[in-house]
Length: 495
Image (cartoon, rainbow, N blue to C red; front, side, top):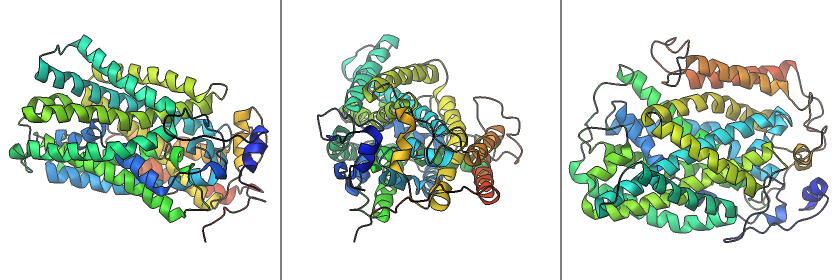
């Protein structure tokens, strides 16, 4: 089959998909022909490094300090959590290059053509939640910084204006799509990187690595530290559904799996760990912690660092906010195929702003963020591990791009149709694993019935992942899939 074969088969015509800075992307979740995949592992690394150099990610280094951990304990929990999360999601970095589409659509090969909507919904939830955090943190920093510099109002109206400025910036870039997002990272990384380094210098005089905020969140050190690890795992897991937005632009005939996986995971780790360390460092300079990290950061910043801080707030909107709004548009399009990516991006942008209001203005920010993370992890962990097993065991890295596009074109049947569009071998383990996690999760969003089953430890993530993995492997063994991989050629490998 030639490079554009799957595209012709799926749409009836070969379409040149222009992907460059300043041009509105037209691809949506359609198959990207091999000839049009002009990205590289270097681009992957830059997207996930630059996209994480934002205040919305910095707060995940601040959170462990609010839990009662000191600086060293906080960054240790971040490092361990990131490594665990990345280990779980390695197969997810390879899906897009094999299928030519994003990961939720690709998951149809494991969950069925209708079952893939579970992944699209999960990704949409992650993207909207993290986009809301990006708009909140950048907008609040903009308003608080302007108040200190120029004496402008710092009230609800000013905050709404600040949020609107960041939201417009984020939505405009996301509407342009992949080519523009990738190009912007070449400017964001050096600028945001320098601003963060300068920030370390600005806050260094007050830094105390052994300072804590008080009692441990869960009463004792180990339960609290492990809870912080669980929060950190959520960072990589949040990218597992959306990493395919960028790896689908990689030609598997030019780059190896190792190159793609190392670039994706390296960028995610470097970006998340650098910003988490900055958050823990700056939080360890505050005598007392308020419910808002951004308010504390601006209040304690030396006057000469306020302008760099405002620039960092804007850079964060370019990075993290754009990545999530772009992902949310693609995911809603995969759920409602009759809408274009431009339309779905505008819709999800409005939803993200509503979520931000409910999670930050109407409730306590710390409680909202921690509860959101652990609850989403209970769904994301099983989905990621089942896709990973599906990639390695059930599909062995081989996929039919044409069959994956059938449902989006309004067709039923095909290689991945299974039982009326659902592969219950994967769907049931996902739901059971997620339920196990929700029953045992430690959070302030709702009272989990079995939250104390492990004596105060939050076992929701390992339990949900373990249950889902075991049930899926058992289902594949006692209920084998017949003929799903027949005739699917292996991808062309580099020489």
